[in-house]
Amino acid sequence: MNERVAVVVGGGSGLGKAIAQAFRTEGYRVTVADRDGAAAKTVAADIGGAATTVDVTDEAAVAALFTEVRDREGAVHAVVNTAGQSSWSPVVDHDVPQWRQIVDVNLVGAFIVLKHAGRVVADGGALISLTSLNARQPGVGLSAYCASKAGLSMLTQVAALELAPRRVRVNAIAPGLVITPLTEGIQTIPGITEDYLENTPLGRAGTPDEIAGAALYLCSDHAAWITGEVLDINGGAHLMRYPALHKHLAGLL
Ligand SMILES: NC(=O)c1ccc[n+]([C@@H]2O[C@H](COP(=O)([O-])OP(=O)(O)OC[C@H]3O[C@@H](n4cnc5c(N)ncnc54)[C@H](O)[C@@H]3O)[C@@H](O)[C@H]2O)c1
Image 1 (cartoon, rainbow, N blue to C red):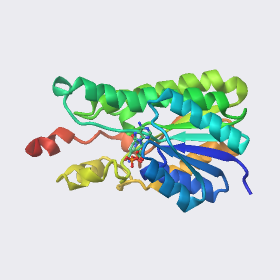
Image 2: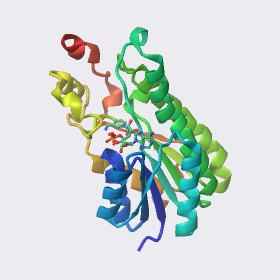
Image 3: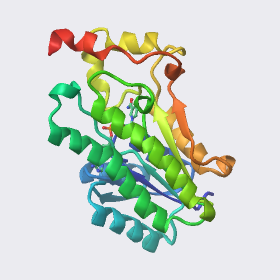
Image 4: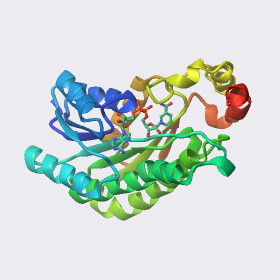
């Protein structure tokens, strides 16, 4: 039985929920953290883990999360941060406070998690962030999201360099389209899913379990020589072009 300890931030929904379930199945003791405390509690109750309410933009709360888990469980071996948000607006129209808020969660929040997870994680542990296909492919209207995820890819590499002396591995997963509460709304927009799939060589959306499997692998000893990697999991979509969101949204805005 695996006796390792994992913290899944953003684990109340979507990919984080699937990751929390997969880590528990693998035998990790799991703490589910989310700004939606009720969702975190539901997932934790389901898998037999602990739950905490944390907003990744609140440094004191994030610091307390990791010291509390370490003190309660004795160590922290794996941290997966999936907390993320998106907005849609052309650059010339984008509301500045909203742009800041997306970057605050997706980039500054991810930095705060890496900072405090990096302080408490056991030597030889693993830290994972969720970036996106949009870290490398621009999408019209997604400036805040794309910029924040591209920044997170580079942050991953810097943190990997800095934490390597303690054998702490820092990686990121960059999914393409996976249907979760974050993305289910786009399915209602005519043509958009078809455009995604036409630009996905393997011809389908991903599943949360496929992302969870990669997170498990990256935190395992099988990946002991992998750090600073941003792993594209997107059915080959990074080889094609990003959907023309503005064309599909044109009649709706
Ligand atoms: N679903 C996809 O197709 C897809 C594709 C590429 C990247 N991603 C990335 O994967 C991650 C997970 O996405 P998802 O599809 O599971 O979304 P989701 O909306 O289903 O889940 C995100 C979770 O993060 C939590 N969260 C949001 N802001 C937070 C904050 N400030 N502090 C703490 N928790 C916060 C939410 O409460 C929610 O439980 C995100 O970073 C997203 O950008 C998703």
